[in-house]
Length: 256
Image 1 (tube, rainbow, N blue to C red):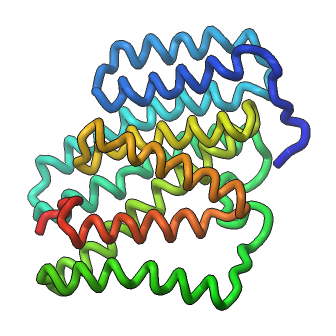
Image 2 (cartoon, rainbow, N blue to C red; image 1 turned 90 degrees about the vertical axis):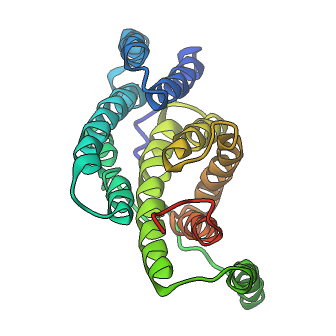
C-alpha cells in the first residue's frame, strides 16, 4: 500500500462508512431516490478530506453507478430467450458491472494493480492443518450427497455458479473495497464496513434480509481473514465452499 495515503483522524472517517452502508441498504431496496441523496451527501463531505484521502467517497459513488448498470443489464437478461440456470449464471457474471468502475477509481488513487490475489505474502499451512481442513471441507459435502440425489448437471452448474459468484464477490468486497477502506479508516472499521455491506448484498441470491445478518458476520470474518493472511485466496476458497454447500442443499436455487 502506498504510504502517502494517511488516515484522517477526524469524525468523517466514521461518518463515511456509515453513509456507505446506508447507501448499500437503499440500493438493494431499489430506493434510488434516497441512494442519490446519500451519494450527494458523500460528495459534500469531500471538503473535509485532502485529495489523497477521498478514495472511499469516490468508490462509494462508483459503487452506486456500477449497481445501476448491473440492474439495467439484468433487465436484458430477464427477457432473454435462455434457460433459467443460464439467466442466474449471467446475473452473477454481471457483477463485473460493479467491479469495473470501483476498480478504475481505486487504480486512479492508488498506483498499483487494482486487484491483487497476493496482498503481502503467501499463506503457509502445515500438513496437520491441511488434513483437518480437508476433513472439514469434505464431510458436509459427503453428508449432503448421501441424503440428497445430486445430478451431474447440478454439480457442473453449481461449481460454475459458485466459482463466478465467489470470485467476483471477493474481488469487489475484499479485493477493492476492503483495501480502499483501510486507506481512509482503521482496520476494524474497514473489516466491519466491508462485512456488513457484503452481507446486505447477499439478498441478490435469494436470502431474506434477516438471513443476511449471518452473512454480515461471515463477511466480517472473511475481511479479517484477508487482512490477517494478506491473501485473497483463503477467503475465496471458504466462500466458494460455503456457497457450494448451499447450492447442493438447495438453499441457493440455481435453476434446478
